[in-house]
Every structure is written in structure tokens, then in C-alpha cells.
Length: 340
Image (cartoon, rainbow, N blue to C red; front, side):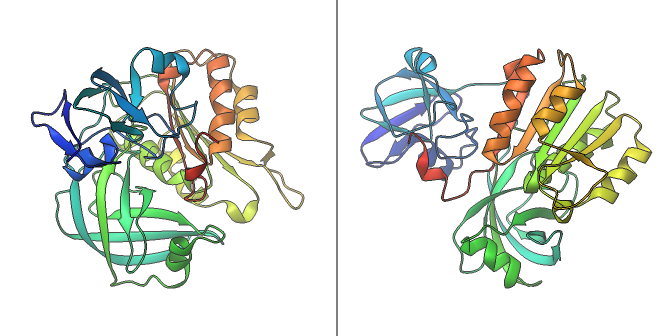
């Protein structure tokens, strides 16, 4: 044991092993520490260092600015204690803190959603109850595979867990899911995690923005918001490369037919043929559609380049930075590049 960590929101201190980050130790201890990518990219585990000193591993300036660092803020996923410390996570609006569970699940269905996205439905057989807030994710371990993070596409009130898993080029886990995963196989699920979730006290307009398999958490957010009686405008923007990358269109059309406050916008960035659909990039479509987003909230999920392009457009349209809740889907290959 190299250091003791006192977390202001938790009654018992925890110990850190040499080279271990605060967040890793907290999650191992079952503490519902707010977090996202766990690799220094997203800033979801931003915390105030109250006492003591830490060494920070490399991280993205998007996640923690020099000004914030000077104010005593750190990233728990990159902070290794040099001595005993006291730390507190930043308590944001409507921060969801659920009991951390280790679930034993079984595959119910495996469905091809697009040429490279697989839908996986899991039945929970042990370790529950599992509660989460729409927009959160879990750590999933398929048989014989490394653990990966995937967002829940299902609503929190549904019994089964649903994930949308994109087959990444060179990705061994996603290849296993696409080619070898079968109903009946056992799967381990740990969580929930993530702070880019539905803020239930907010009654204003919602922009739900998804790129690729980022539609999974956005689907959960949109369906949950409408199912719980949301009356304000809900604008769903889904960006795909080409026609073959579009999925769940009929489902959202049916949802919009039942809920007049939902509008659905599909944008193709790289159509290979003639199309009557809207083309371009999501941030361009949003910039064209809105003059002011004051009072609205945005939930953004998908490739980092999309998240980074959308964010400044939203702030330019008068959306507060704290009203942008983003989940950038970093691949395992991209995660080590923080700080590069």
C-alpha cells in the first residue's frame, strides 16, 4: 500500500497500490465514482484535490485545462497519489449515483443492425438488481475476451440489457461479437458508469445527437425522456456515413408519430450515390437549424471527431457548456494517445 485516499463523498478511506490511479481503486472498492472513458479523454471524473499531492499521467487538454489544474482540479483516472490525499468528485446537476453491480448475464439475441453494428440483448441472471440512468454505460466481458465499455441502448425500466456494438477494423472483441457470439453464452457486466446521462429535472428542449453506434445511449435517453412524459421539444440528430449505416429509422419514425414533440433528422456525411436525404456533417446541420439554444440541453455520443465538432457549434448558439453532456466513443487504439 502506497497511500490512503479519503473521498469526501464516501465514509471509508481506500488504499492505493503503487502506480494505481484513484479512480481504479475507487471502482474496485465498489464506490460509484463518476467517470466516463477512464483514459484521460473525457473529463467526467474531474475532481477537487483537497489535501495532499498527486502525479497525473498524460491526459487530454479537452478533459482538464491548465486553468482548472491551477485551481486544484485533477482527473481521478490519471491521478496517482504521492502521499495520503483527500479528494472530492465534482457534484454536477442531477448526478446519477447507482450501486455498482457485477452481473452474470446470458445472451438472448444477437441481431445484425447494419453491416458493421451488432445488437446484443442480455438477460440478467445474477448479481442484480441493476439500476442505471439513460445514457450510462457498463463494462462488458464476453467469453474469452477482454473487457470493453458499451452504452446501454435499453431503457432503465426494461428487464433486459441491450448493447449496440460496432465491428472495429482490427478489433478482436468486436470481431468476436460480430462473428462468434451466440444466444446462450454467458457474459459479465459491471456498472453502471458515466455522467453524460439524462438530467431528469431539466424541462427545456433536448438535442440528442448521435454518430454511428453512439445511437445506443441516445436511443435510451430519447425513449426514456418521452416515456416519462417529457413535453418539451426533443430533436434527434443521427449522423451516418451512407444508407447502409442507418438503423432503427422505422422505430424512431413510429416514436415520432406517437410523440409530436419529437423530430428526427438523419444526415449522411459520405453518400455513395444520389440521395434525397440531408447530407453533410451533424454540426453543420445543427448550425443551420438553430439560431439560439439558450435553455436547451444536448446529449452527444459517437466518434470523438464528431463530438469535438458539435461542441463549439452548440456554445456559439448560446448553449451553456455545462448543458452539453458528451460521451466520445474512443477506441482502444485511440485511448493511449492522450496527451500526444
